[in-house]
Length: 192
Image 1 (cartoon, rainbow, N blue to C red):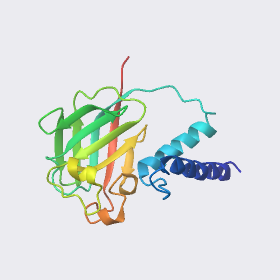
Image 2: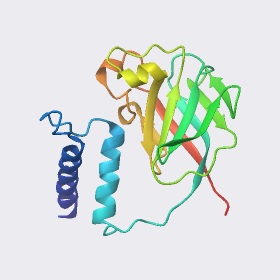
Image 3: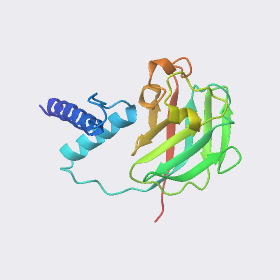
Image 4: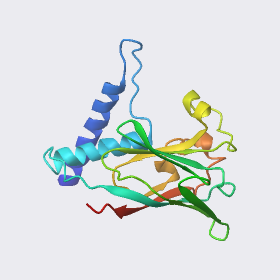
């Protein structure tokens, strides 16, 4: 049964990548896969391995046109967005630079319209920063120092619910991130 084989494959890959993340020179504690982004990556890897026989599909370059955040506290005017590709920042925006931020109180969402977003491909990390949001107790120290309120990695996904975002997925963060909290990303094709 194909579905059963896919589940077994994903469980194997979750264990494999968890083992790879565990630094046995400093601790014997199994680190595992902890965030929604890591789970998505393992799912992508299993799909490429099982469906495409380890042959990557053709690269597609996209730019982000808009990001919609649902059910966020506040009006979003202090949000900053940083986009990282190949482990390097490639784009930054705030209300005063490279993006417009619109709060739609009626539909309880913030719309971030990006200007001058570069072409994106492969693994992309999107970080949201805020100076006014107080991170919840238990945030990792790096997030606290950078005022990172949440982030995610993606390859081609368009809509991420609270349970699929890194940081808001943790139950201890749910008093800040309501059940309806989500992020939606709209893309434009890059004209070559």
